[in-house]
Image 1: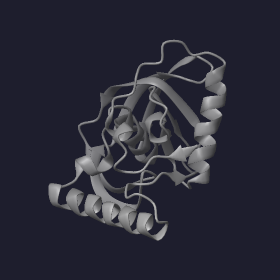
Image 2: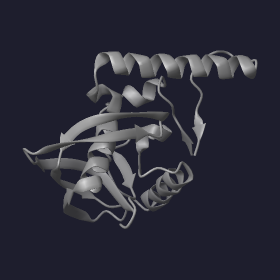
Image 3: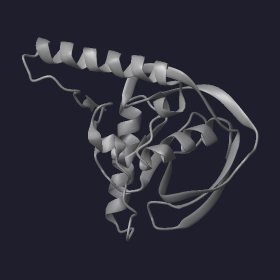
Length: 177
């Protein structure tokens, strides 16, 4: 799976609801988990690989890999915490993002089984980050406009430079997971 990079319009589109979780979702889930491992990440959403359905994978250190299909965050804490985030679709760039400390989420797994999960700490943060991807929101949307513009400009310059080096048309390339 190729991970789409900042500038690809699919990253800004809202993912579609999964109508029926069939046997193919076991393969999709496996591919998402493999891509996030290959990219050395902790989470990856369908839209980041051009799969425009409401699914994401999370695998943080010390926990099992998890798949969330058609997730709904049903509860968030009033308490928030600031923590540095990055993204496989915006490689090499990080910024502090404020998010709720704890969440409660409902979703289905790749076998079509519903579950509810209460999460805190890093798991809650990664879930919220990936959940945002399903609505076309990136972590840079949670930071100041000035910081966001700097990151976008640097990514665009890097893409143009890479395109010139390869004698290809300018644009933001895809990243191999």
